[in-house]
Length: 223
Image (cartoon, rainbow, N blue to C red; front, side, top):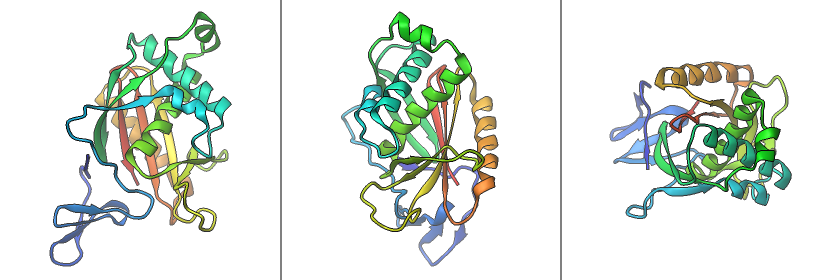
């Protein structure tokens, strides 16, 4: 897995080092990432890592109950199947992370399709589901709590083994879904969501995840 910082300036720190976004320091070709935002590692030769939508209903993340996780899995399933994708479809990720996953799920039922007939709401919830799987796959973090309305972001994310004070080493997560779009629409949505998080800017970093179900693909950007 690689970290990319497209279009972002870097200032020299000490000889042999460069400082990038959120204080990440590149030294001798390696990234030392601030606590809680560590990159994952691709397992070379094993093919794309699987993201199972039904892991969402296991209650493995502090901020997603089994019931809510099952709901997110249903929404993501509807979004993917509506675009004629089948289980095992590849999901490339770009932005500040570069990786390829495959998404697996069980086929939807007619009852599920009737329940999730509102396309906009389903796309939003489906994107939440995919993002909830991407965050721990790309970082050492998980969703620890839902945010409150008006903050400009959707969830708090952090390390589940962190027993420090509230919000220490935590980050903000803003998610958005697009049922069918192109590269321009994805980047436009990313920029809009980065701007939206300005409402709560301060000392805590943010992660923006945009999920496009047409290809499908995702862009993950750190702030």
